[in-house]
Length: 205
Image 1: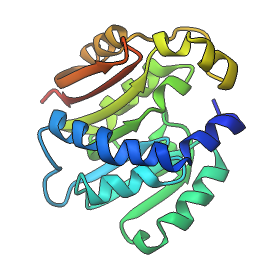
Image 2: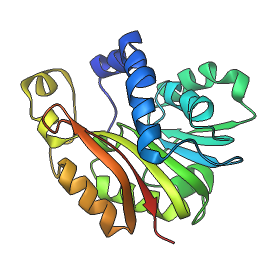
Image 3: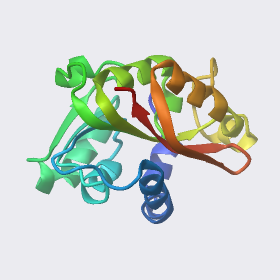
Image 4: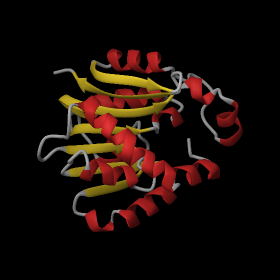
């Protein structure tokens, strides 16, 4: 589902970008075992204004990124931000549960898939993980940071943001679903009493 006006403002806030750049990305790099191999092709689920896409290129070392978002406004912003990288980035308005429609992505199309806190916005989040498993090459890595049901139940989240209300996941549920789709977790950790989950998982060979 689309973000509301308040959450759009929050993700475009310089403080949010600093947190992602200075804490989340270094943590995810450590959990993933370092940057991607040379020439790696990545997909990003829910790219928003393109800040995370730039980090995938610059910090994770992807050679190319296919980035999708459900919101045309976000894709417009991402296109402006990434104009100088257009030879390395392909942007599309589309659904993270259907990368075949967005990019004609076949099975095993990517070396890595990134989820910077978008899957908790998807009502059928299990289908998003199934699609991630489908498009990853055997041995490919799924890098994720997520907001759990514990956080979404807090009064501040309920008051300010709009999220699906059914079938929300805890950190444990999310990791169990990854295992169901053949992933092996390389490393994962939670923050703030289980509100946030960061990790990396490898698709089975």
